[in-house]
Image (tube, rainbow, N blue to C red; front, side, top):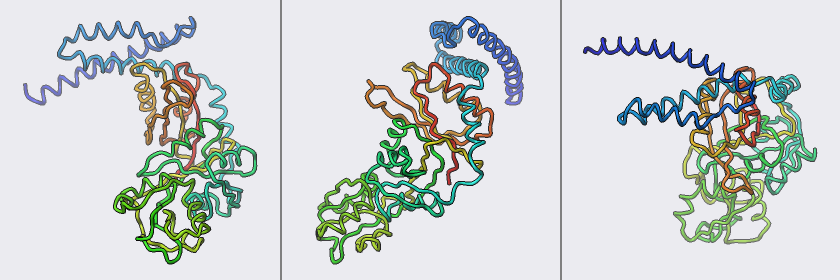
Length: 381
């Protein structure tokens, strides 16, 4: 057969399959209504195994793997369709709507902001990008930033959440799961690390270099090239610079920002020492209440899923069905659990998109989705 003839046959088969698909989805909707009336669960694992066994038998050993993939996906789409149809305008959807109505058109230009570390740190630079005229309060660790906002001491808190080289700041995600907070804003900040030391200290004199573990990881190649230097973790880059300036040591240095050199009277021993020139860190601005500004273009959420094959695939298909672009998918162990994992999702979408809100409503009320946590709908620059 000629290629054009084969394609005509494929087109004819696709037309038949499309009609069959519509009929199957109609049946799936009837099943959803029947199960809602009877109170039965949407997922019937036994029946799905029977269907897949029949498919494998019908298509034969040469196509049984592909047949299983096709029908597993089809059943996943059916379940997602059923859950979306059965999802009601619950408290979650109302919460999103109320937050959008209560949030002003513009992010405030004045606010009290909690930052980890000290003046000159990257978190301070991010805070100024969020709030034009901030009153900044500094804290030694991430949990203290959460506490300052939780207790009403500060309107917002600024925290690093992900670096393009060192990956996610896992402690912040764990704290977001522990505390009831929302992301109101996010920004990607260019990071330019430099090596700083007290006046008169030379690179050859340096035995110890202190900085935040993520900063040390981002400068691994520089540290590897200077084998005599010991890397020491610190709570924050700027805090490490401030501590070194007061220490009186002449054999130590820190990795921090250029701003810290002038602020704390330190010399720059080496400039731009990151492993890659394209070094960016995402910072988030957290709030106690849910604030969703008109320019929100991104969502973040966390959830745990049941330990069964295809559980994650089911969720991904539901996201794909509403056309959202996932920009992050990562798993974190649930603290205190026995090998239970929480998945972190970031995706691009508008809170004005009713399909997205309906999807999240269905996920929030889905009995198979455990520990569903909405982290926020926000604008990221």
